[in-house]
Length: 231
Image (tube, rainbow, N blue to C red; front, side, top):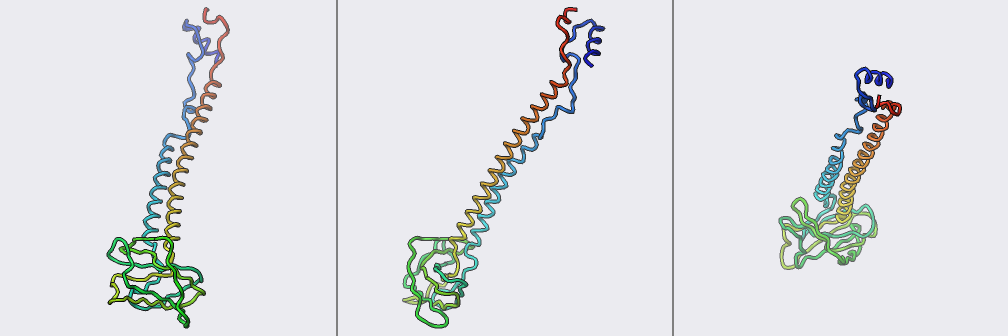
């Protein structure tokens, strides 16, 4: 190939120099991966954000699911599958934030009989608002053993508010923490994956371009002998 190019240049009466009659192989000109792969970066990041929003909404809507309720001013039976400390919540419909009605009294006793269980007031406040129901922690009770317990609430000075219930046997705080952890994990994971994908694409394209340049140099014909351009 180089000899033929030199002879062609001599027949045309012009000097030959490196690259004047040389064409690169077009098949080697494409840098990989294609720039279209950059679309993967926002897809991963936006997907993580959307997933985090979905988890947050779904978790917030189901924060109070699984709790057992007794209308204020009435009695009811609740079942505990495990022993241990549990929170007693006040729930109210039609309000933005729940509050404990004045004069509301609460007792819980084993269904089989015995003395009412002692209760304490929590050191901190926890509130939630989901599906039109506002709730807040009111009391803390230590359940000595699994089983059925009778919950009784009375209201001094008249009937208890009709929109108020007592909710037990659930832990909205743990559900909320799990929801937030999942949301941050998915959102952060999408961002990290997008960043990793961006770095991988840029590094891969840089290496591909380097290989293309090396291949170009390998295809180039050798330089003509010294002094050839003067002939």
